Length: 123
Image 1 (cartoon, one colour):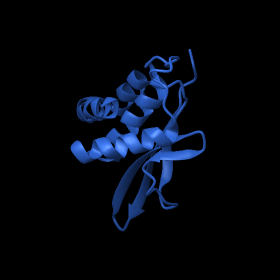
Image 2: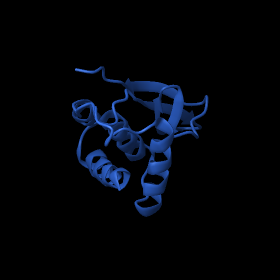
Image 3: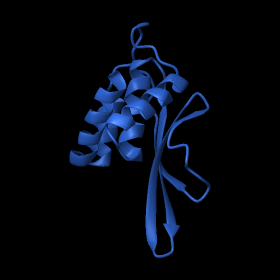
């Protein structure tokens, strides 16, 4: 249920905030330190996939929701945006990594060039 809540909030935030404001805001989410908020990257990936069945979302809201879940769980995830040129068009993709695991956006491939990575350090 937490993943669904974060996914709904992330979808809304992506629609109304600039990327800079969005990353600043999620970077201010307090690092969780309790067993109640603890979550592993694998559990987060599963939770986001399940939540997306109820609330379909693109790659950026999924990555943002996962980022928030992992931060509340006491971890330091990295959210990355990448672009690829396909013919005359640009394609964009967002993915989330944590502790060496691809949490969301696993369909990223070498054609995407990372243009922005957001990882905050504990305050």
